[in-house]
Length: 341
Image (cartoon, rainbow, N blue to C red):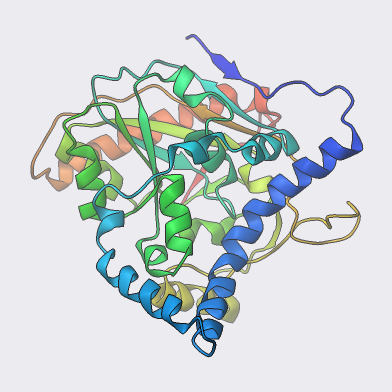
């Protein structure tokens, strides 16, 4: 099996300025996801009480008229893929992309990405930016990362993630992508979803996958090959507090997720100024995203439960093999194995 690795450039001696730029790149990603929504909402609310109130009204009107755009191809800005800030973020951890097989551009794909981690840093960097040369390693393949549909109702934030290439993880949205006349469409789904973030802790590899089969049905309906993807080190970018199942804290997280769409997680990294104090800057642990070989599936308009279970089981076996083959080269102990929940 041929393995092609796209490593970030070597920096034997990083200058202080380079270290600061890398830290800013990594912190920008975290701050955008945590604070862009409340800051945008406060700004729009504040403008209502100033002479610029028409801006808020016009934006909200446009938001309503534009409500179907995320599910109908979105509005991606190609130049955003080449932002220099993504390369600094890549070098901070660093983040690598490992190719194990070809993905011919004459067909479509459903990539199952694991694990979710806290913020899906590896999958975002490797599939939505070109800092590790995805378009060179997989020519003709257009990746689309699917995320919570509710995020596309949030003002300003929805435009930011839509410009980056994210799409709602809804049937209508993903069917639209895979029904395009141009082949080479690759839908990337973090199959564990937000639920998996509840099990995220450094050194652990627990995947919420046993009951998550929607991505297999999607692949079968369109005849799109399934591709397992694993990001080694994703769970190590933040420390987190994991509550035992049955505890009131865990029950609260599950109820919150059912209402809002994602669970509140307690996590922390390091300080921007000192590695020995806590903060929101991720821990600089290597992330290696390994893309497996495609699993061909037939096109079935209405796949049966048995057919879905068959290919779901086949996918889980392929994912486990991918993990076992690459874990030691990514610094994982030989005695460590995947846990499916």
